[in-house]
Length: 148
Image 1 (cartoon, helix red, strand yellow):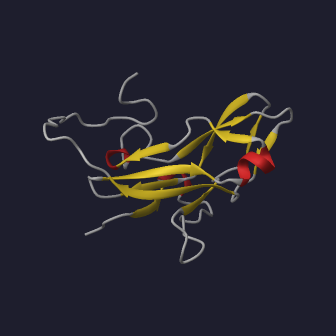
Image 2 (cartoon, rainbow, N blue to C red):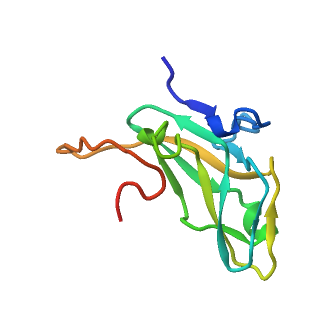
């Protein structure tokens, strides 16, 4: 039985994509890289594909954080602060569960993220639910699929 891990989405199966890894034995996060080169214009938002999907236990979440160098070296912020990848995002019918980052370029110059450049780190975490939690709704899509 698989507990948690990463797979390459079918769209990038024939590309050179590295699965996320921790860079040191003391690293909490798994480093994610860009699956393709993307340029984000000044004062604009851009999506950066990782080509990766994550599977985990039902009571776990993958939290995505930007690498600290994005802000001070590239003038990029993660537009939605912390990304939350739910366990049922994996293999959803909309986008297969591919993890993408939404980045905002707050600088005055266009910024290019090169394919293979490390852009984020992901941490698997357990979470708790309340006593009465009878939600049986099945996820059908990707970004914004659970409502407003």
